[in-house]
Length: 81
Length: 499
Image 1 (spheres, one colour):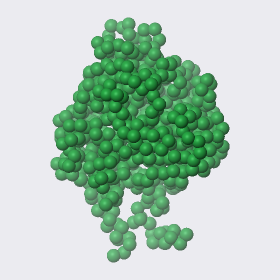
Image 2: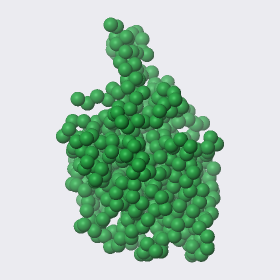
Image 3: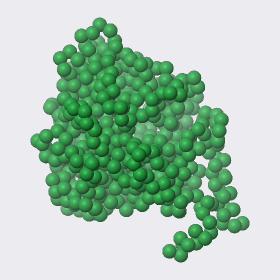
Image 4: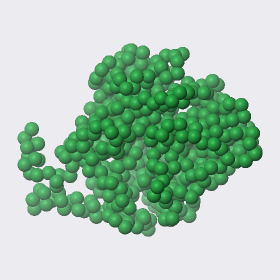
C-alpha cells in the first residue's frame, strides 16, 4: 500500500466515525447532510447539520493539511529542508 | 492510549497541546511598558483526553490556567492544568470518563451514579480566573471555584467559603465592587441539575460570605453573567433551555429556543427575594454584560446583545430555530429599566450598528459606576487575511479589538494582522489613579500561520497605532475563555524566576 493510499484510507475511517455518535443509546441529531468541520467563535467545531461553511486549514503539514492532499514531491521537498 | 485521530476538529493549530509550560524571560517584539507590572492570568479550554462525543462543546474541555508575569519590562509565562476532581479521575482512568457538556447521564457507567447525584463534581474550572479575598481561583458555572496557588498555579482544591456558600454552582462572572471591595457572586441551577434556583451571595473583601438571597428563575436557562450597580444587581435570563428529560435523553445541556422571551431580574443590593422584579422583553442573547449603573429610579445596563444563537454546539430543537433573517452577532446596546413603571417592559437602544463579538470588558475600576469606554473584539471582513498561510477564514476570524465611547459616539479599532485570531481583550490601567481608559489593552492573538500564540499589548487610547509590544510564545495556547489583570503584587508573587 502506498503512503497516499494508507493516509486516504485513514481519513476515510475518521470521516465515517464522525457520522455516528460514539456511544450507543444517546443519539445525536440525525444528519441530513454529512457532518462538516465548521468554524465559529474562533475555533473549529463539528457541525452535524452539514450546513456550516467548511474550515479548510492552510496547505502545509505544520498547519494541518491532511497528508493525503500533499503530493509526494511537496512532502519530500519539505523533508529535505 | 490517547488517540485524537477521530476528532476532526483537533487538527493543525487546533490540535491539543496537552502539556504544561514554563517560559522564563519570554521573547518580545517591541518594548514592554515599564509601568506594566503585575500578571495577566487567563484560562483556556483544552481536551487532555478526547471527548466522548464528537459533537460536544469546547466548553466541556479541561481548564488550563496560564499566567504572564510582568516585571520591569520582562515577562515570564507559566501554564498549569486545573486539577479538578474530574481531571484527576480522568488521569487515573487514562481516558475521558465524562460525557457531554453538563450531562452526567452520558458519563461512563463507572462514575455515572455519582455524577448524576452530584453534578458539580463534573466541573472543569475552565471559564474564568480571578482574585478576591487574597485568593486566586478558577471557575466554571456548573460547580465550585477551585483555588490555585498564585505562585505555582498548583490546584489547592474547591472553595467552600467556610460552609456558608450553599449553591452547588458558582458562576464564572462574579462582580467585584471597586468601592466596597465586595464580591457579588451567584450560582444558578443552584440545587441540582435543571433546577430553577438562583443563590446570590455577597462576599466581603476578606472573603467572608455576608449575605445570601435565594431566587427563582422564570425558566431554567444559562445565566452566564450578571451586572451590578451601587444599588442593584441585574440578572439576565434568555434563550437557552434545559430539563431533566432532555438530559436523560442524552442530549447536550442547552438547547436554543428562539420562542423564549428574555427576562431581566433587578434586585436591590441588600434586598430579599421578594424585592426581585422581573422585566420581560423579546428574545435576546446576552451571554455577557459590559456594565450597569443606577440613576435615580432607573437601572441602565449596557451589554453586547444579540438576537440569535451564537453557539453552534447548543443547537435548537426542531421548530425552535432562529428565523432565517435573524440578526447575527452582537451589538453594543443600552437597556433601561424604569423602577417607577407599573409594567414589566424596558427600553432598548442599539448604540453602535457595528457587529461585535460576545465579550465585553471595561476599565474594572468602574464596575457598577458610570463608565465611558467599553472594549470588545470584532471581525472586520474588509481587513486582509492570508488564506494561503492561515486557512479559509477570511471574514470568519476575530481580527480586531474595539473601543466604544458611550458618552460620545466614537469607535476606535486595533487590527492584529492577516494571519491572526484574537481572544478577549482586557484593560489594564496605567496607574491605579489614572483617568478611565488611560492604559493598555492586552489579549491573546493566535498566529494561525506561525503556529504560535502572542500576547498583544496596545495603548487603549491609541488602538489605531497598532500594538506597542507582543510577547511571543513558541507554541500554541488553547482557546481562551476569559482572563484578568492582577495589578502590582497583590498575591505576593516572589521576585526572581517564574513559577
